[in-house]
Image (cartoon, rainbow, N blue to C red; front, top):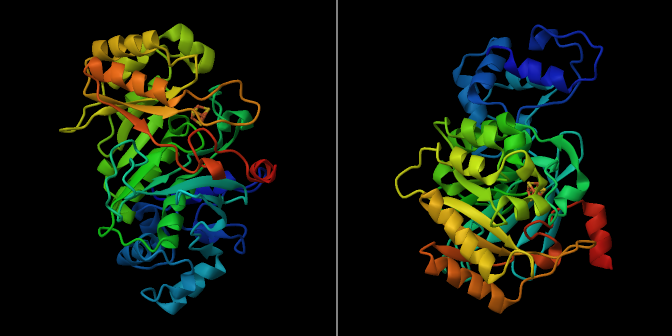
Length: 397
Ligand code: SF4
């Protein structure tokens, strides 16, 4: 689509302005326009607007997504007059910037990254190699070159899971593809990661429900795979069970692995903590998951947040076992001990109960892992991502 980028820019402008027909007709040449998030077709269209050949788009993509250049002036592969013309029209690289960071005792780091409108989004870096498990639930071993980045897809969330602090924000806005992929690149750049030399896992499990921001989320995935160079097999997206999103996902030629946030053994119990169940019950969610054509050895992950005395009893484990065995899917279960948050009416399961729950699932022939909490002391753990200022108050208190 030749003018896709123009219309995207237009959609971000205040109402009442004349719609541009070309980038060079744009009514506000001085307005800053971020290139980060443009795919190769959009960059090619942009270069055509500047009467530059198509190969300049590849050079620009290389500078933005591989060299993580943050200043158009430094993109020396482009001729100076072209750079100047682009700058005059307000274009900048627009690599998202980390504006605040918090470091946990366990090495986890939580970042606040500025979005296009100055609002912050939260992203978490989890180094592996400490003998625990990776952020995606698999065993991390002792490979110090591995790390997992937990990425947000929205600011806030509309799904209203009762055990999650992000839900308390409500939905503030969707992130753009550039803001989603930009979190990853900002963190990779901070840690000077060399793509291909260090194994990086991405989990789309931060703030927000990715399948309620489907188009931007998938556009970000394509950017990360095709332009940044992270294999899709190293990515996992978690959904609360948005059935139309799962069905679209099943059609994607390039897609991450799938995780379903289960958290209860049946619809009645799940509705209490995940009201979204009223819209899409477990039978429909599992039916949709079965439409996703899995790659060889690929498994669907079912995540289960353990809430003390509520969903962590023996009978809950047995019912989860029956439910998932009936699903007849290649799958594994990630058990997550609930991470406390202020004003939340839940308690943590004790270690013996967690162990027993895992044992009962394994007894049902289900691979079950316990995800080690990461960065609890900096409010970076699962379900704890909320807003900076409030968190600072919590940390100070
Ligand atoms: S757990 Fe995920 S889907 Fe549920 S409210 Fe929190 S961010 Fe949204």
